[in-house]
Amino acid sequence: MSQLLTVFNSRLGHKQVDKTTVEAEAREAAQNVTTMADACRYPFSSEAGMHFKAVYLLAKPAHTEHPRD
Image (cartoon, rainbow, N blue to C red; front, side, top):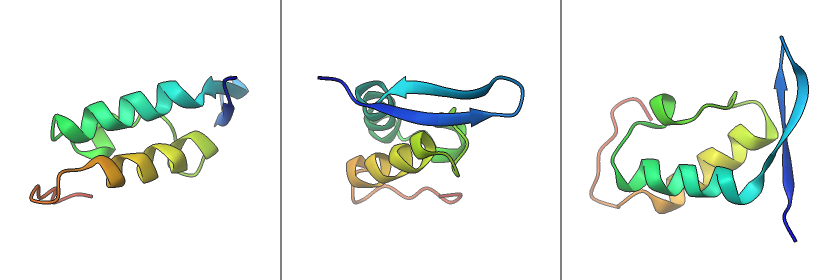
């Protein structure tokens, strides 16, 4: 069963994205050493953005430095 996370877009209103999609994007960005700001396509204040940030930080290799995160 998939879970949906809410994203608010001022142009489109509320929309929902699949939680597993957000998690996969966050893990991939962390493993590729992409900064969180560059990788996250959701507003950080949205449910999807907060979940992305949490998964990204957990998946980020311990030795990697991200100056803007």
